[in-house]
Amino acid sequence: MKHAVRIMIVAVSLCCATETFPKKIDFRMKLVITQEEVSKDSQEDTYEVTVRGRAVKYRWSHEGFPDDLEEKKSFRLSEKAFDNLVNFILANNLNRDLKEKNKTGQLGVGIIMRLDISIDSVRTKAHISGMYNRWGVPPEQRCTISNLEYYRKAYRILGAIREEKENF
Image (cartoon, rainbow, N blue to C red; front, side, top):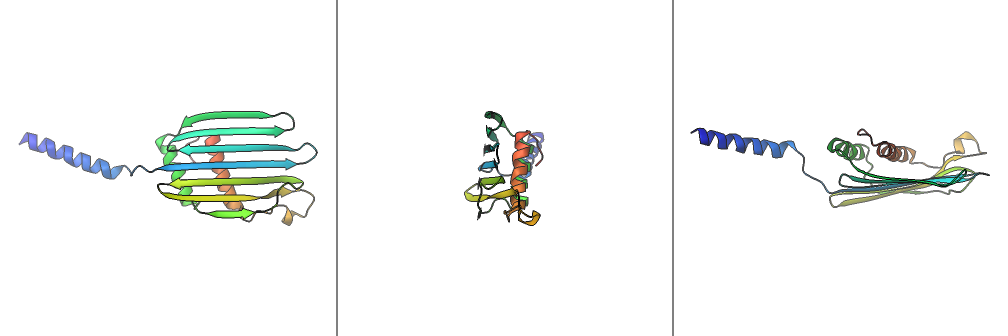
């Protein structure tokens, strides 16, 4: 009888354990943001984040004034950070196709952003480009990006990954 009770306890705990932990998902993300300043001392910063499962590769490069620089690092997201990243993407509807192409290269600061996300078999691609801060124009014409909130949320992911934070 004691043996049967032990078997039932193990069976119940295994059953509950499978319901407690979410199904493992196939997650991939690539985020590339280029910020370019056009001025007499023009410069460009490119950030690239690649996530495959919990493995992260981060790269930053700076070209222009005062010197060319580069930083690279790789690390693994904790389970909590991974869950927070996926939940942030889903809660903010970042896993959707989006295309907004405006001119860049004008006097001021322009951005080019690409965000490719794959969750299981669902793939989405977002591309935003335009002037973030045009100089020499009225304030209401400085930003040519209509999907600015989407860009800011993608940039928030970049900031959290760069700082290796768990919360997005």
